[in-house]
Image (tube, rainbow over the protein chains, first blue to last red):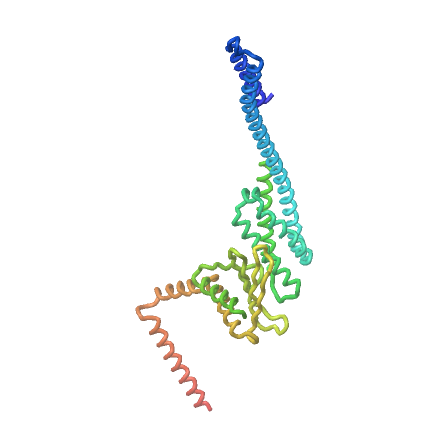
Length: 189
Length: 145
């Protein structure tokens, strides 16, 4: 039995007690059926209203607690999804590094575009932001964006010299950052 | 080039010279980038695909890294625009490689080793010596002939 129900029973008992006291204190002449019904009705209305208020307040509180629990569960679920996404992005980064080292630039470019969308998603994730040096991360993402543009130009036949060791270096730094955030989130859940 | 782009380039020259716009080298050779709140600007000195002539490419990436604007200026087609973008590129290079600071340091270092005469006097005396050398070389050439 919750507190609101206990309180309702107590209020009802007090109401019954007050009604009884009032009836007992009536003179013999006043103790007519109509008067007794009137007293019982008045006390029941007042105490009924109080019980109703208590019950409504209790339901509101239960609703708030339920809502909070739903939000917490949802947040935990999102966190778990984030960890999986970060892990996936880290693996993708390693894969791109392998493509670049093997000079498979078309494959690297395709995978970089996939990576880019993940990186943009992380930028708006609160849990990710809380666990990363955001300025450093943004700088890395910006460099990756430029690398994608340069690789795209190169594949399009532009007379451009791209330093792939520099691209690899950016990816290496990114993989490290992603790994750090992944570990930090894993131990928070 | 549109007036708007000219304004952007002119402002970038001023901000770069003041040190308010920071440029960094990218993974592509002879390319620099600067990050603004609304996006990233790239400038690149390269060769034209068709005639292999020198060109500057100015690109703008939005906040999601997509190239939203690209402009190629060539000295043959757009001389004024080329000169303007070239000035920006030169300013960026001078700032990035700290050319002025390096030259000042070299000058200070050299000045400290040299005696009381001012560098201007040295330049003047060097010019005179060069002229004399030139005169004697020409004179001996004439005698030989």
